Image 1: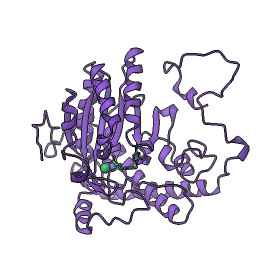
Image 2: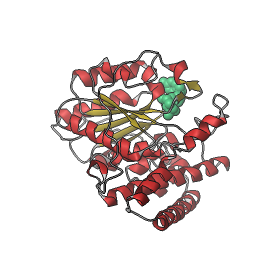
Image 3: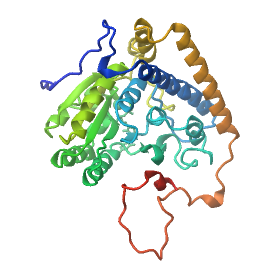
Image 4: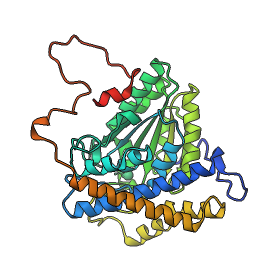
Length: 363
Ligand SMILES: Cc1ncc(C[n+]2csc(CCOP(=O)(O)OP(=O)(O)O)c2C)c(N)n1
Ligand SMILES: [Mg+2]
């Protein structure tokens, strides 16, 4: 296996001192804990609904990987742009998308965040600068570079977070995206969630190197590896990466070492990995791990953590009730909510712009 020295590593969390790492406040830490719990409970309910045939298509769960989306998205501005692959519930909820609308989207209902047109793999909310949910592996990597080009062109001090898996780094489009981003010095943070598998293929079967960050070096892109089971480690790495991009120094690559506790999708019998491996990774569960950190640092109490869990569970039960009782899209509305603007054959051609209100794109 080829090895290359790493350019840098994220700093370890300052667990022994009273100060929180990376300039975080106690409230930000509590918010990150709640977000991880939200994603976990959302997906537990989504899995149950899928088993009841209430969710169509595929359902890819992010359970075990919550610290990546939550740590990364908490480390950037609310108006920075987010793109991700089909395992996307975590990005949507970490960005603050409406929980009921996300659940209704899985159920294919008109009240869904994309009016039931997208389903699980294509959650998106332009008003929150969350641009999906992409099912074609790697397809959004150059799209993220293109959005970063728009930010640079419009002289907006924004960055793009572009999430994808280890498997995507074998696609040609990954290399095209990184090449252009490096060549044009674009403000995009490429976040590779290395969960050791691409469907049923192990890292050794899919890639000549097991550290995906090595692939960024060919594009002279700085890269760090972080512990994707530790929300603070992810936060620190993405904070560093976003600062780099925002200061005009070009793209940055973050590799988060993580693990999905469930199969590739709900249709996966998981014959390619043994239960002992899954059990070992479950011991690193990012949610109790961060809960322990919060209690040790007197940021919260076990009682408050239990209350968060209860509140989130009530929120999810309500989201399922809302989704299940929502109307289906009207059949004659099939061509609505598909294009940014309704197609007018009489209209003269107009250059697209991201400078205005991005929420307009959803109308
Ligand atoms: C271009 C393309 N090729 C193949 C597929 C089928 N496919 C769906 S997910 C997947 C594995 C991707 O693995 P990875 O990027 O590591 O993401 P993970 O599912 O592990 O989060 C494949 C091959 C696809 N959707 N698109
Ligand atoms: Mg993977």
